[in-house]
Length: 347
Figure 1 (cartoon, rainbow, N blue to C red):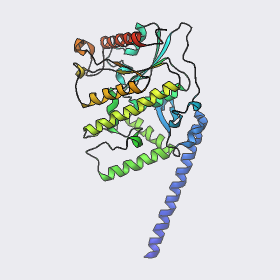
Figure 2 (tube, one colour):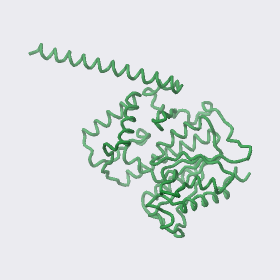
Figure 3 (tube, rainbow, N blue to C red):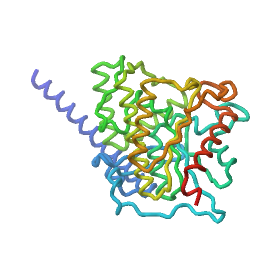
Figure 4 (cartoon, rainbow, N blue to C red):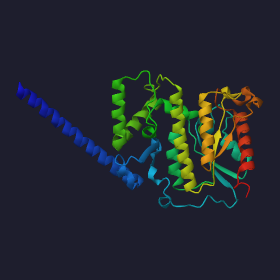
């Protein structure tokens, strides 16, 4: 009896050892491969330094962003660069946001407000980094990645609508927030599995990339839905907005250190905001952005004011996305605000 138990135990240890060695081999191969391809020496810090982050921007193009939170507020680690200069004295503007900023979501004849803004003001060259579904969690690594090579004159940050993304999964600021969003379908076993999954992704680069590949396959083939039934209370909304605040403040700090002349937080509007909707989320969001304006060099462009003048039917093709008429309106409002408030534009 005891001999059989001992044999089972030895078999278990043997397979456990094999699994450990395979994991070590795959992990070493992944890090060496990425080091050779991306020339990122800090890749070996992943899993050992909690301030070092990796984010996949586009696996199909093998776009991966690496950055270290320790670089913030340490001037000697970030080399100063001159701002974008053009012989025609144009200003380079980078725009970040989700689908309402990416645009072209209303069929034929669609547009985007960054494209309309560039057409409206010939002093601007606009590079639009917005992507469908992007929240500040996704735009932060995109900003870090591109600021390594170039510094724009102006950054426009339009991320109000996708703040709710934080309610449906783990954010990059999970440790800072120290808060579990309430999932009505979650039980203790689910929580245990998710914690193990999270720990593996934070420790093993091979596992992290494998997770992203599986997620991409799921999105392409629509194999299963990640949607959850959440109990969204005031505390959850507060934490979601707090996540937005942490990321936005980091974007502002990084932009300042990289000598970006001006940073604008733009509040876009959706159909149900006409007239401006009162509620806990809008209160939390407005309080957050105006606090950021007071404590940083960022400025606010709030397009949710005086919305009674807007024709809902002409401006929207659905509840949120704008027609070319709506995008032209937004571009005119932003252009007017920049003309009235931008110091670099009025030099």
